[in-house]
Image (tube, rainbow, N blue to C red; front, side, top):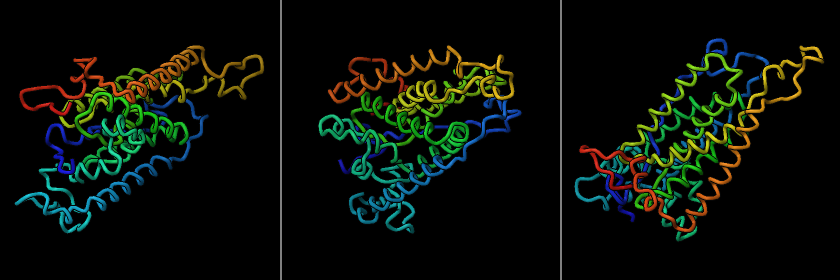
Length: 336
């Protein structure tokens, strides 16, 4: 297991990669993503930068533990560490890891998601720890840039508590779905959590539909961004199950956590008593929140029960394998 090749079927690492950031936020007067009122104060974003710092620090720890020069004799003739001037932090040979990162053995040792260890060795904590591991510099940069573009805007609008809950639960939701479908390789990365933030952006737009300007432009932009990201997940060695699980978790969480009050309720202090709204939210917002809460509880419960009972979801859904890797004449999908 220690000599796993990231490119080889059955023993590689499924990087949760390929998340493209949405356009950076614009001023409230012109952005389709912002409501047309200035009565809500913005939060200072500190959680998202902290998550970025934590992921970068964790990657440095991973490379320190990996210690490529110490394992140079295990690679075979003609295979050497990449960027050897970094010493202990140098990368695995590109034949082992084309993303400029550690070995699969190191990732597995530090908490990568692996079906056998989660199910048979009762290491459920891997559903959480895999979110903080990355397969390489390329993987890390793609995810962290996406997190900055997506997460800062959400944190400024809704605060660190709600965004933090969505990020963590979406990451775990992505891990659960990934583990249900992938048993032949390990999986790492924060892409499930990032897709959760994208899903939350979509549900936030839908549940707060009446107070947005440029609704059609906002909806169209988000759908295009999500479609591109999911399409990238159809490439080999990308864990699209984590993307889908994270997206669905975040989408439902957005209905629960990202409700905005009616505009009239926000402006109630400027209105006469007889004109003030009594309800903070609209009826359809309460309905969506209730439905999403039920689906979240049922989904997580069923998923975790299936996982810890050792259910292999691919055996019950033969076509689901095409959700993670689209088979073509140009590449193989042996890892699914």
